[in-house]
Length: 390
Ligand SMILES: [Mg+2]
Image 1 (cartoon, helix red, strand yellow):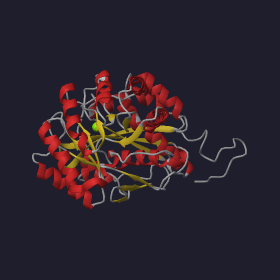
Image 2 (image 1 turned 120 degrees about the vertical axis):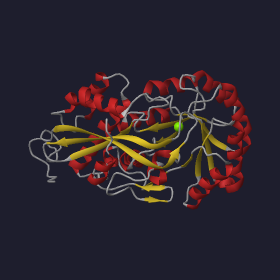
Image 3 (image 1 turned 180 degrees about the horizontal axis):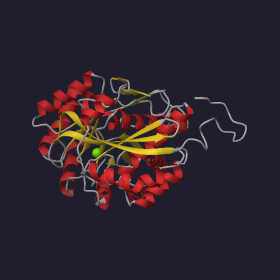
Image 4 (image 1 turned 45 degrees about the vertical axis):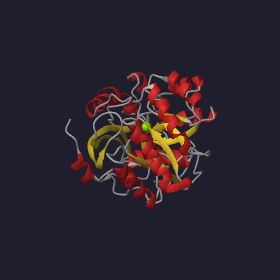
């Protein structure tokens, strides 16, 4: 790419008026998980449904972004509904636009379909990928520059039938260098307490333990759980209560020493403002799909930071593409971040990735890619094989 600055515009060649988006391609995938994941709500899942979007341009540069059809806990989307929203309602606002018109494109998408963050996410991130590729810079450079070389992830311990299996899973992560554990809870109080106690006793004081109930607990059970695990130095309790019960979360926060974290109940900036106003949590988790990609996640991080909240970079189980999005966002973040579950998919969660150049992982650390854009390339053979019928 010729990066010479043109006399007419003052812009590097290709950055301004010439590049246009010519096609929006949706790629629905069924990506196998290493083992079925079980959380407190719903049946165990053997795979995750991923929707990739490729934005093609008249100059041959292609941007990619990812979302997932999670279908539970705040997500009502399916692969088919995400595809229809993007193809029928978003594409007319994207075709013919410059990849550098992200602000007006994202505004148009938001106005086209109410509360469509899961569908907006892959467009947001494919626009950033395109911008980076056209300019020849990594996405973190578009977000303010690199503040760290690696981003730390946590181990997610899904619900297992026995304490031994939970501890075995934790030991495997510990051997690989993970020191932060998110323990899925919410189905069986006794088992939850035994898991937390078992992990603390087995790995000692140097590991960080958080619990996540995925929004299934009633107030009484949630308070009981918090009281019973208080002695084990819990760093945060994530989304114990249903999405709507912000007052309940605020009440829990007043009655326990364990910091309360929001996940499913924060989809938008208004949701986060509501949580802050109620003092219902002091930690927030964002996800590329849930929160509308980098475009909106970054805004949530700024709001959280202004409110003195801690930030927990997350994702549903996902491929290297959505993992790369969070990696760049985290790379360009100058403040502290918790080791979050943003990389759980590529750190053993997925049986197979969809890229030919997976992100480099060393233990729990994901290396920030320095290649242009998000820095990952789709493997055509794999996406053909994983393609889902709609
Ligand atoms: Mg969660």
